[in-house]
Image (cartoon, rainbow, N blue to C red; front, side, top):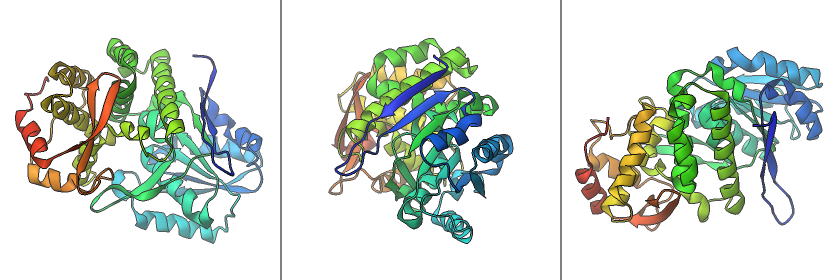
Length: 372
């Protein structure tokens, strides 16, 4: 990959062009202050929302870049973990920003993974009715998926991401070098989203992942850069066509219907998002095969690839089918009381379809043994 790669997310509106650029560049963390000046966001102060783990690794570099550009950062720490992705923590962030008297032109910068990005984005969308938002994703999952597309929000006790808003960032700055400090489990969880992009959109990308398992696990710079580039390009194209998930964008939810239910039923403590997604993708592929939409061999191909990255592929013990179905009814894609899934027909081709409770039960009963 070239030293700098730019991917356009092309959005529009009747009165405002909200398009933005994803910049992928090694070492860009040290240049963000200057980039904000180029965007016209270089005067006054900004908020940096992060967590103690990420802040301990990268906050000093980011704040040095901001201060060198004449921008004064107000740092807000959110505790690590999905369990803190709630309105109580959001309210605490509001308190801090208000006490610091941050103004409407003060950007909010998300320095962290998917949880930080979702929460910082929701703060940016709602503080003073909207302030500029900048994504600086530090995990593979955030770099390839959650930092792109403008979905922001928090969890509710009854389900994941049930409270939120669509709010696009002004820019996304991806520094692949930040992945070098990522522990193995977080790295593998991010690869779940990478695999999803191949499954729903591009069989050749899926084959690339299959051919580069060891390289991706070892964080080979070229392999990782290609995975980030392809994933962001796929997602940017989909979001550009359907920003608010009225149609095409729903395909990005492949595996998420089951996955979000599993996260909620395990209280966001048992699985990383990418791990729950991996289970959800296998379950969705098995459901597709049970309904006659896809060949069972495709489901096994997906499961085998996920297992190669040591990702879980089976519904955990202790979750009953009744509990699962009740939680599925809280999914955001439910329409007229019907549970709707993104189902696969072939690699690179998926479809949105309503599925009955009995079809779900039949699929779970017919699932083959794990390939592990």
